[in-house]
Image 1 (cartoon, rainbow, N blue to C red):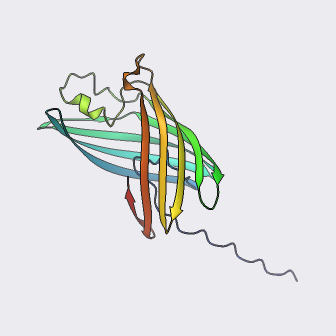
Image 2 (tube, rainbow, N blue to C red; image 1 turned 135 degrees about the horizontal axis):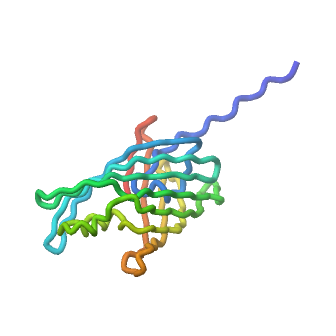
Image 3 (cartoon, rainbow, N blue to C red; image 1 turned 45 degrees about the vertical axis):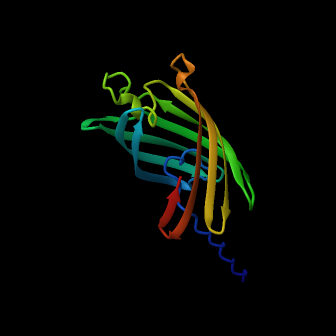
Length: 195
């Protein structure tokens, strides 16, 4: 009679993923995952003020050390009573995390922004340039990035840095991107996040 096989140890509970840093963070989905998130931004600078709400659908698939995914935002902006809504650019990404130790997880990837939106810059409204601080133009964008993360006392700390390039023919929109965040699992499925 064969000896019974011991059950595999349970995977430790992990804190939830980041919102705006989801694609670039040092974590992968095991299987398929979907999420809808919403973020509010308030802008008040150089005499302009506006409120911006971005609601985003996200779908990802990953295994082991890699993940691919897509994000599609819906944008609402209100500038002192004048408002506009539109679908944002489709963001596709892929990443590989070949470095996984007890202390650190690290790797890199690429985000591609496909021009699926109407450009907020092109419809002539005075407040539209404000939205472009958070949303891309109607051009193709490419962001190679490096990412790393660690867990300390149940808190997952994650950071990434990349360089975003747009095919506008000018370097005016090219920029360094970064995200630093922390997540903490309160209980399943509730986690606290900060970015």
